[in-house]
Image 1 (cartoon, rainbow, N blue to C red):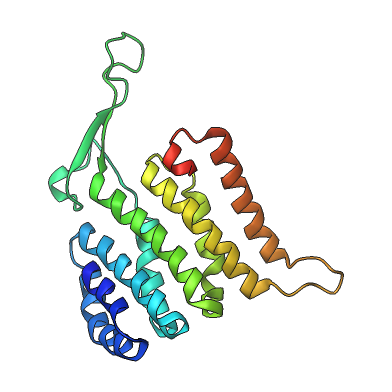
Image 2 (cartoon, rainbow, N blue to C red):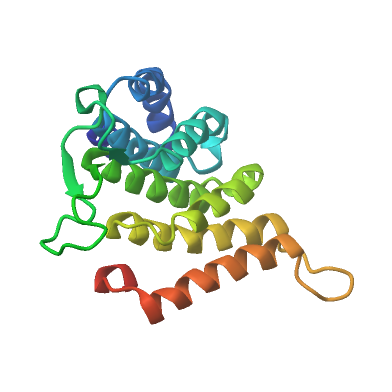
Length: 219
C-alpha cells in the first residue's frame, strides 16, 4: 500500500489521479481489516496521494480523516485483566508496575502491555494529518480544530515516535490555520482561531526545548 502511494509520485498529475482513484477503494477497505500495519501504510498512501493531488484530494478527506482520527484516539495500552489473545496489533510488551525488588506498597503491581504495532500506526496517523494540512489547502479548514486538539493531546505521549510526529505536524497546522483564518481582523489583530493554533504549537515546541528527553524529537 505504501509502495503504491510512492509510485503515484512518478506520474503526471492526471495519470496519478486516475491511479489513486482506482486504488482508493482497496485502501479504504484495508483500513477496516484486523491489521495495524496495513493502517499504518494506508496513512502513508494518503499522505503521498495528497502531495500529488493537492486540492484534488478534497473528495477523499471525509473518509480519510475519519480513519486517522480513529487511530489517534485509540488506546495502545492493554491492562493485565484483558485477554491478550483478543488484542489485535501485533507484539505486546508486558510491563509490571511496581515490579522492582522493594517491599513498598507498589510491589507486585498490576501488569500492562503496550501494543507496539499500534504505536507505529498512531505515529503514521499523526504524520499523515500534517501532510494533508500542508498540501490540501483551504479544504482542510473544517478539520483544523479537531486535528490540532488531537495532536496537542498526544504531545506528551509516552513513545518518542508519536511525540516526534506530533511536533512535525503542528507546524502544518499553523500553515493551514493561516490559510483559513489568515485575514487580519478590523482592529488589526489576528483571528482568534489562528491565535489558538499558534499558542498550542508554541507551547509544545517550547516544552520540547525545555523538557523533551529525546534529541530526535527535539530536532
